[in-house]
Length: 260
Length: 327
Image 1 (tube, rainbow over the protein chains, first blue to last red):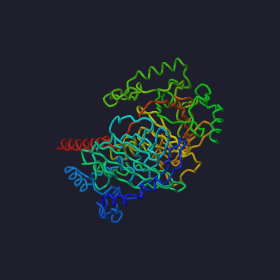
Image 2 (cartoon, chains in turn brown, blue):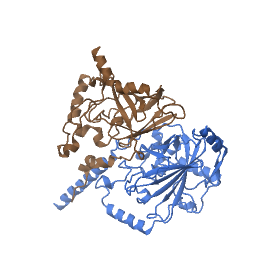
Image 3 (cartoon, rainbow over the protein chains, first blue to last red):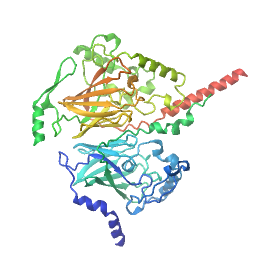
Image 4 (cartoon, rainbow over the protein chains, first blue to last red):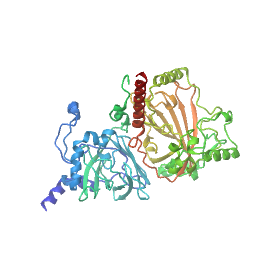
């Protein structure tokens, strides 16, 4: 009982405010989630609570350090199966080469939501478009029909519906190549994510993702956080086509050597 | 109430579109879907697949339009070719698109009387300015003998940076000429399947980005002229090089939904440092079922690594052969 009460207190800010706030509506009467949003947390470094630490590249000094964070995982515990726990450790030790973000690969869901880059929602009745600045990642959410995922992909297959003021997105068809963060937290191709976006004030959304992956975790678990609206009058998504920035890393050793 | 009245007024006006398709086409307003703000609803999944090339073939010089019979014959001829013949490639093992359902003959294709996508008597990209000729010659000379040196010597498509068909301006591609439009009261978003770029075009009258910010896909701002959605794009990077253009490339695109199945898409490209005059092309987008698939180009890219390692292997083999000969 004590545990439950503590958790409730810990997670209540996100939940409690959402019940009091009524968001502006779209022409079809749904809460209007249009805007440019961004997480202001350090979940992309580590979804679990973590103290500040040196980064994997000492030559970057403070630029490459890991900023501290309270974590976004409910209860802070990730229920890895034993083998998966070992793999997570390996991932973490080799993150400089294994983290898909290093190579500018598509981030997957839910990581796209809390990378340190903004994303934009363009909301229509039949389709909600999520465009992420990082790597130009994009996903469309089918609101009218919920066809099954035709094939696995990096950003998965999204079918959405409204539960009251909450946009609920069921994400399947995710491949096993993306991670949750730079700390090596990972999943398999059995990943199933249920995301919940709820307006909680004109400037904020509450975001929850229920994670289910029986190949990697012994039970479903949840992450939650607040997403903040970019209110600069000229806010817009700028290009971050990072492929160009990883070519030296990926292809540098294959370059023609001078005089070669 | 205002919105309803505005929609009613707009619906009552049939706005003629300068379509240059042999006749003036008017968007029969009643027939096209509209948003709650009265503007045409451009949403849906579309293909720009075309049986007509960008530039008019030499044998059709001076002939901007086919007769209906000729257009049907041309369509039959083009769709009857294999994917690799259409690409002018001798490598069917690389470009046999039909096995993936990606061949042009398996796509929905808009019928058109045009003989080229570029409009006007020439139907070709205008002559280059002297400056552009010099620039191109220098670029070619610089890269000659270095095409396989490093990733930046490879074409943008191979590097998964930007597809020539991706736009803006958008062009039909050899396959996957698919795009999705999502619209809300303040934006029109265009998602190109190749290579998963979303262009979110604001319609709030805001100005372009400051001059110092240059992007591969430029910076697009939209507004409505009657029932036509007009997009102005500037702020290109000089690396974009659309048919050799510079950072001064200025584009105006026009989207007109003419019926439930068709958007007439037209663009005018202008770059005084590249072409002697602006040029315009017109493409018909037809509605398809979709879905749009994820085109994870970079994530699946073996091309750059294989090309470069192949080149290094050939250099090594040549060196060894030279050593042997000298012994």
